[in-house]
Each structure stands twice: as C-alpha cells, then as structure tokens.
Length: 432
Image (cartoon, rainbow, N blue to C red):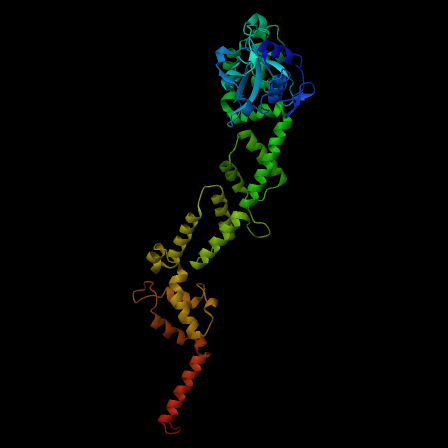
C-alpha cells in the first residue's frame, strides 16, 4: 500500500497533545517517538520496525535540504546512535513525541539544537509526495515570532521554558529574547556568552536540564548510578553512608563521571570495618603486611589505610609501596642493601641464621622470625671497625652455644655427658 506524505502528516496532526509514554503504542493514550512513527504508518498499511535504531535502516536516505512531508527525521542524542525520530511535516517542522512529561507536538527542526544533532533522514517505501506543504511556516521572522508565547519561543529555541526561567543567567537572556523577538541564532549566541554556559561542562548542562524538565528520568538515572556506585564501593572496601552514596550518585550524573573518576572519589572513603579493611583494600593490606614482615619492617594500620586509599584512587600502586618498604628495610639492614635491590627478602637472607638457631636450640624454625633479638644481632653484627656486617655461621654457632638456652638442649646434655665420661676414663675411674 502507499500514502501521500501530506496525508500521513494530516493523520498524525489529530493526535497532537497525546502524552508521551516510553514504549507506548497508542496514538490516543500514550506513545513514544518510534511508536508514533510505526502506528502512523500502520494506519495506511505500511509496516516498519518498532525501535528508532531499526527504523533508521528502513527505506532510502534523504538529504536535509531535500526533505518532503512524510519523511522520517532522526536525531543523535547519545553515543549509541540515533535515539530520536519524528515525521517531517514540511516548512522546517516535524511531528514528534519528544520525551517523558511532554506531549506529541509540532517542532521546528531548524533550531540549533536539532540541526546540530541531525543524524539523517529516510524516505519510507510506500510514502509518496505530491508537492503539498502541510505544516505551518517555520517561525523564522521577527513579526511571526512576536505572536508566540514565551513557552513556544523557548521550544523554538530548543530549550525548556521552565528550565530557562529557573536559572537567573538564562532567564535574563530569555526575557530579552522575548521582548526583542530574537532569532534562534541570536539567542544561541547570547546563551553561550553567559557565565553559566562558559563555566558549566556539557554533561552538567544536560543533567541540569533533565533534572528540571524530566525529574522522573533524572531520578531513575540517579538510582541506577547509586546501585553501580554501591557495588564499586563494596569491591574497593570503601564503606559509604546512604547520604554519601546519594551525594556521589547525583554528582556523578551532574558531572558525567566515568568509572575512573568514581574510583578517585570513592578511594577517599576507604576505611576499616570492625578493625579490618575489606574488598581490594583488604587484599592490599594483607599483601603489604605479609611483605613488610618478610622484610623485617613494622608498618602501622594508618599507613596501610592511607596507601590503600591512594591506590584505589589511582594515585599510587602496590609496587610503589613495596619500594617504600624496601627503603625502610635497607635502613634497618644496611649490609644487605644490594641484595634487597636485587629482589631478595630479609626472610630469605636470614634463613641460614634461623635454621642454625632452630637446629642449635632444638626449636621449630617457624617460631623464629626477624624480630628475634638473636637473629637481629647476627644480621647486624659489627666488624672490628664498627661497621655492620653479618656474622659467619661459625661465629653465630659459637654465640649460640654461649647462650643459656643452649645448656637446656639435648645436644648440650649429651655433649656434657660425653665429656664427663672422657674425663673419668682418662682418670682411670671408668673403662673405655
């Protein structure tokens, strides 16, 4: 079947004022942008897909300067591709179902907002054109513009009236535009010279407009952000209160924050929960405490927390903190600086002393560590010039046998018994 584009436009005009409803298909009670297109064409027996992303691939491409009534016009409102569609009505106007909180309306697509976001047009198979211009003339001359209400003028400029009036900077400019019957270009130039425009990021401007014009969608975006941020915070080990979570979520929407920026914000909240760091901060704490012990270095919980926060924020790395611990170890054990630089831990360096001490005192080597005073003295023994050097194993063994603990070992008792027997044998008191 086929239909003249002007007939399609005239048919859809009777539904001006129908409420916008996301996913809606009813031209009388609620419809969204792609539903308006699909149901309008279906009335004339022409079938097109349901969504904007599918409709943009139907029919043949049309240039902006060759639009005819009945053509579909698409606008790019996100990085995912054309997200909005309307039906061109002639003379620079289209019929659209704009967004939540607004009704099906006629809109001027020659305003900067629409021309800057124009993503293409399609002429649908079965829609013809007989040369009739059905829409009212596009509002471009001052005499016509004076007849518009402030609300209509705001729409022609591509802005929401309530939002313009809510911002003192913009309200003043808009009042001048109404009184002077400015063109869209003049209003746009004046708008971009305001302090608000020049000091506010694009993502923030869009969020502010959405918050004022479509609070339901804005609040839904904040709720979605809260869930995402809550999950990130738990993974990082950054406990946040409900109020903090809400503030960060709103900030993320207003500023268009990505995950790296959110991590930097949440990293400031890394803290202990019942005396323990959790999430990736807890894993870092475990790794660093273990490494510090292996290097004979004592580190405070506060130092661990501060560095966990820095790492979470992307301002430092775990390797940076290991290097810090290494420097501490070199100051405690200067004799072994080159070995530490070569990648050895003090546990590895001290192992021969630990094994010798365990063997000599008949102890479990697992109960001896770098904090043991005997091991520390062996590692930092002084030479004749007073320079720190490690004791030789032979000297260390002799030192251990001068320790009172040696006397209580089985080895010492056996040695003493053997010595006594030898003395008695030498005296002739006991036979060999």
